[in-house]
Image (cartoon, rainbow, N blue to C red; front, side, top):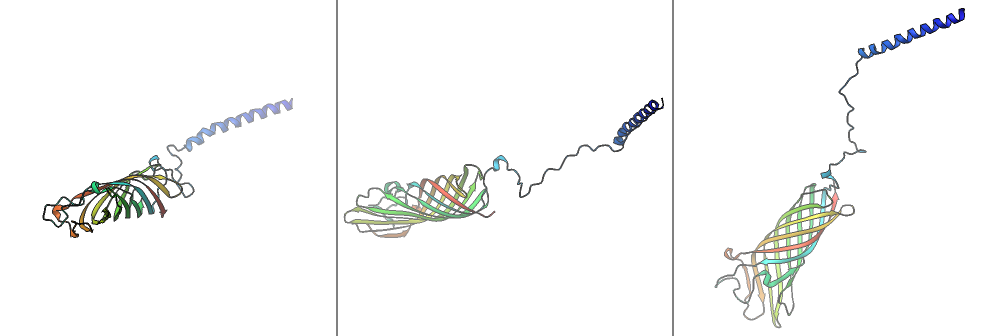
Length: 266
């Protein structure tokens, strides 16, 4: 009888100790309430885990030196100078000063070097050379249109599959051609002056820092100096500054393609 009584007493003591331990747990939680309203701090970006770009910033964002080459086809409008009244220092006969009456088109080739300090802005210098195609040149002839100037380029969408940009520039133009209107006749014409250049285009990323894309350009200028030399009868030699009253605007409308290369410095 002593052994069963021992087991009964042990069971009662174990149950009492378990009840005391479970009653003390809520008291400990009341003494140390859990903090609420806190969250883990967000992870900080580092070199191994850069911050994610927003949808508008997707793609490469090259900053640095830029080099570009363009080629296209252009047509001319306007005139070398407005028709003078006789007497004048400019030719009044046997010469057509209109661009459309003399030039059928040109093949502009441009080279530009610039710097892009931020993704949306670039500036630099541009050099252009364009062989021109003459009209009514049965006995041969050739010509060219050259330009040197500066430009400011705004990248409207700097980092997309198609990066849209627009540019404005100011420079100096040299226009010249040599024409043979007859078997024993020749005429050399040259004019020079300032012009403004406006372009709109887009860059499509290729491999690495290379881009390529189309562009449309409009140049508007005014010639300030005019010169002719000819061997045909009735053509006088002229080398004069165009009077203010006879200065007129001329334009070149160009469609082309442009490839660029960026030396990234960011």
